[in-house]
Length: 443
Image (cartoon, rainbow, N blue to C red; front, side, top):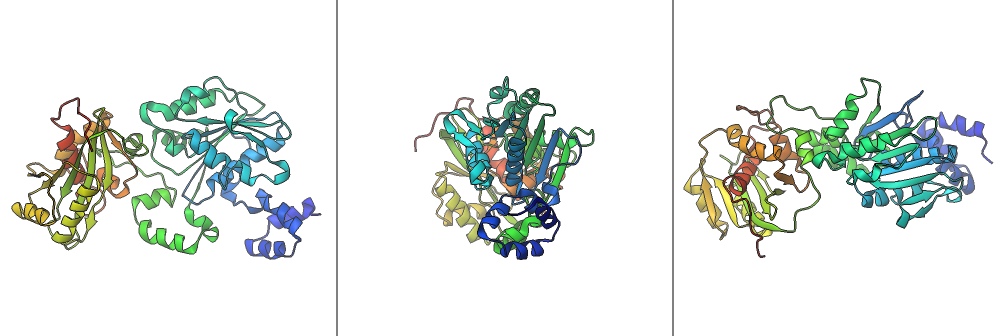
């Protein structure tokens, strides 16, 4: 049998030495080692030293955040038979499919001889020694008002619903119920999206209220498919999305910007509405095909009067024929009611190119009499009023929105915010001057 002294020594070796030695062990011994998390974890995946109350793992995708949270839960359950652990995700579905049943979830990382009994109907796990864990949804903050816990693992807090402050309400209700045991603790694992809750917890590090562990996707490259690593590095390595999702950086806001990342995160929701009344494709044609993008953004109005940003179909370095085809495909694919295109560059040429691409639906040409930032200000106000939602993550479009400065100016990526301008044209057509009670469209 493997002794504690051997395991302690093995944990101190480099990965190559570990792999070579483990290969010489019997299958039964290798199975035991497979569940020895201290043997495999990196320093950034180890709990903080000393006394702590809140540990936030703020790292890129593929860092192994979920495994780290699940292993911490397992350790708490083994060491404390009286442990009552809250497992909180953006939804109950994610709590089940990721935190409990996922390939890095609690059930998968526990050895067969000490796996908790899972009761999905009761949203409860029970270990052989009596420790228990309970599943919660951050979308239902009131469900965390009342229950008491000794420990908590909160997964992907950057995805927790931010509408009406639900994410922070869920966190606060959970914190007020962490009053069992001698030293209640909470672990939060997340990609550092600029939500109010994430920014609040990161800010608490300087006050000693939270310990933050940071890391990148590339730190775990040895355990990821090489093609995946090379592809995402090439595609996203020099983008704001890459800095956030891969490098694990919490992106700073640009002073004076009309849109902030926290604002955009608060208006994001999963999937489009089923009751769309009107769909518009906004187009900002390029002045040339030598590098400018053609902004093509699909927006819709739902029955409640809320605008939905459905898709970013923009194309770069495209000839007039190519970008016109992209507009036509977006219009057909989304069953649009109208195409709204800026005609400052080319006037009737824009209309001719779009007609040649077989766009049969109504085409409205608009002329810009003010700068991009000035046109965007009333649309940004719609976001502030909670009247716009993003049905997904539109990284390049959102980078441009966050670069538009109040009073004029642009400090985002690229020479011009073509995608943002297309969005402004579409939302202006849908929302500014439209009746308050739209009728559901018949498809």
